[in-house]
Each structure stands twice: as structure tokens, then as C-alpha cells.
Amino acid sequence: MSKGIDYSALALVIIGAVNWGLIGIFKLDLVNLLFGNMSWISRLVYILVGISGLYLLSLFGRVKAMGEE
Image (tube, rainbow, N blue to C red; front, top):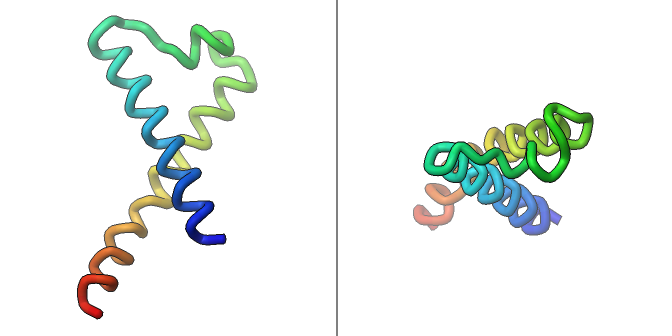
């Protein structure tokens, strides 16, 4: 269960990172292009990416704990 959540969160954060890269380089907001300007779907994508990023902060502690075993 935890691995599934980890991989899902990682995929969402990668999507967010690619989107920010496109915004920075080409001024192209892919989420906005696909789902509309602040539609409920685009807002949901942004919320899920943000929650995933916060969740992955726990990865630091888990990786450190794995290294100490």
C-alpha cells in the first residue's frame, strides 16, 4: 500500500516539475492547456501535486532510516 502511494506521489510530483519547467522555458502551462484556466480539474491537479510534494517530504526520513539499518 505504501509503495503504491509513494509511486503515485512521485509521478504527480514529476508531472508538476515538468509543468513548471515548461512554464519557465516556454511560458506554457500544460495543465492550463489541457484542462482550462483554473477549471475544477486543473485545480485538482495542482492540489494533488502540492499534497504529493508535502507527502514526499517524509521520504527524507524514511531513506535516512533505511540507511541506518
